[in-house]
Image (cartoon, rainbow, N blue to C red):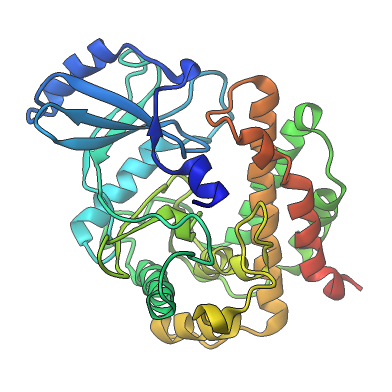
Length: 360
């Protein structure tokens, strides 16, 4: 078993800082989810960097997943489990992008201390590494094609038809996102510390935004370990972790997914330096072209792709900077959060390397 599988797969006893009144929660659940057969059992997933996530099971063998906001002081607009619930509810009805069936949303913090939602538990495989160890070459190629097809299907959806036309502000996505993560970085500097490459990117990125201003439903964190694959086939059965979803630029969302090709295998579980042909994984260019074919786009010029990749590395570095801030506040939901936060500076430097040739 790989290091990431050991760290993040499976469940454990609920961490002390994430415990809640399970009896009161069970009473609430039996009122709002009538098929619960007591007693209710609660385990915490090892993953779930931002929002604590729990496996719920009952005496009849039913299983659900609980996602909640973490306790403690939170940054404004972070841990948006209400948005997660809204988007998976819309997508579950539409059915072309697989998600777990949503069951209930509770915005009353008095029930377990923070707002939460419950969805069905989806059985299947989660691959924690982009190289997908432990499967045959042909299946690995099919897994990559299924990922590609899923994100392309998401970007083809019509937000208005799904009732999500107000899920975000269409247009001007990059400027808004750069401003948002720059502001969040500034808010965390006193606690999480300064990162020189982040400040270079904050200065450079706003002046080099490509002119394309498309808009679509975007996931915001589309990567292999946020997908559940069928146990017996290279087929995506659920896309997880919609906390960062919004209306945004589809190429930003796709480039976030694509940046695995430029990330190192250590720490970021990327593919940099991997023998892709031997693994059966398509090249970055081939993977991008297949997405463009599925979405009706022309392949991207290299300088635009480099911007999109750098933007996403900057955004992820901003998320890691926030995690580092939570570690120092003592509100991080995962015991590996400190290691995650420590990757902010090297990732910001890698982001700058993507566009340094354009900066002159």
